[in-house]
Image (cartoon, rainbow, N blue to C red):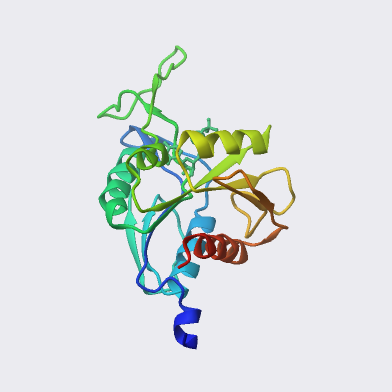
Length: 224
Ligand code: CTP
Ligand code: CA
């Protein structure tokens, strides 16, 4: 084996990544969103590209500049748009890593005009969005499918149940309890849980190194 190929273990592999939050519109000027910075997903995209992969990054609204030129970025806003884009690229992918913080609910009705303030309380009717990860698990063929889990209680148990319910090969459990982990941070603490329920905890690290750990694991499992 020559060294160049060894250093580019994802050469010829197509990797689909989702990242960032989604914004669910209420009216032309308002939305429901979350604090996801997209940093973890963008770090995975960068590292995968460095390892030779052909990366498609489906990104919710974030303000991050990618340093690597070889990442195709598809910008989306809502969960529905992210669902459409993910399904467009998934069939031809070898690996899919869904790190986006997708809204679980969206306003049932989007007002075409700005909602006016009234004397009464405003009650919102929210309806469920599609679970992108679960829907990909249902149509999965050759793809190695990776999900994230953000838990604040019964972390391992909940992550394992998501892994199973969504037909994943690997789930990355995000620990919010630890210092130096979470949304805005440049560092993260994760635990990898595989299909066979093997649990692999990692220490707090920069997100770029966490991305490398995740990709190393996938490369080993897929013999890429
Ligand atoms: N996910 C997704 N589409 C959704 C919701 C979640 O693709 N509509 C993906 C996320 O990108 C993540 C995984 O599912 O990879 C788990 O997301 P998480 O919010 O932790 O779990 P949920 O299944 O949404 O359950 P809950 O929020 O109730 O814990
Ligand atoms: Ca959720």
